[in-house]
Length: 386
Image (cartoon, rainbow, N blue to C red; front, side, top):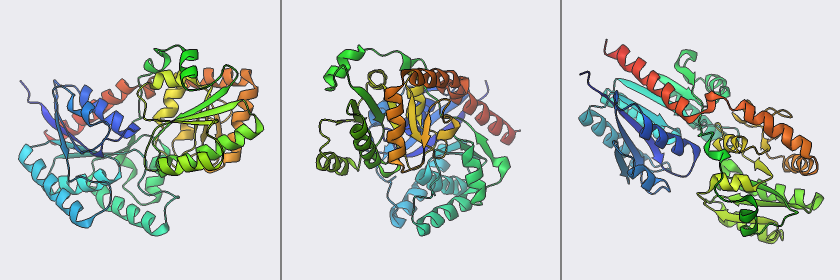
């Protein structure tokens, strides 16, 4: 019997986010006839218990893989990863996102790991950052790119962004879309009217929701400002934000200072995403930068019209005026105007939602994503092993 190859996924922390959820799905569903699967992640994330429960996989949640940049901790992490890669005999390391991508590829290079794959779920450098930090992150990405057999991106636009920054060569890049379970989000378990009542919305309200981590990338303060502007023009519009994170205190203060307690509901983390999508009349995403936003895919699968900022991978799935409505990053007035249009035009809502649902072909299915990764791993590993 041909031996199974050892595949290891590395991610900084298992927060509730698209990169983390997709990584766990891969760890759970890789072909066990061909691969032994391991996951290393920094401990303390919301998805830790879900990771520990994955059968037939080795899951290591470690305290020394941290988000914040710390030269001493980061050097220690590289050395520990190098030692683990050497002693475990791993055949392929797949790193995810910025911090784990830099440290993991350095360690894999030092350990002589045969194959290294990295997924860009959104570049570590982006226009919202101070120039010094942006240049530093781009420099780091350039340094580790030669240590990488494949650089996977979830949005085609990330290839040009990487090449423009001098990261890698075009032959290294490949698009593997972030996938979702399309059937799940079209099958809510709770009646729509019942959940809307529980959330405090009335039968005449036009309910706009979002599902996101309250971190700077997602611009939750822009969400509140958009809600205030939209509600002023159309008092039937009400809003909820499902999610939590570092900016929650700032969001609460803005809601209270703007007198929006009866307009904006802050729900915290929720596990009933299909039901929340079903309770909405429209979905909005205010991100300043993105990879390929899974929440938008989920809303499209649930048949909800989408309003979003035109950043990074978002326009690859939301075509303005066809499968949704787009505004510039930070343009809260534009977002509010789009939402007001949707609230007043049922025909537009239906047309956008129907075309968005048609856009979600197999390319965006989560099982397609895993199958493509399995094929890529096998191809790389077979080429290394003759």
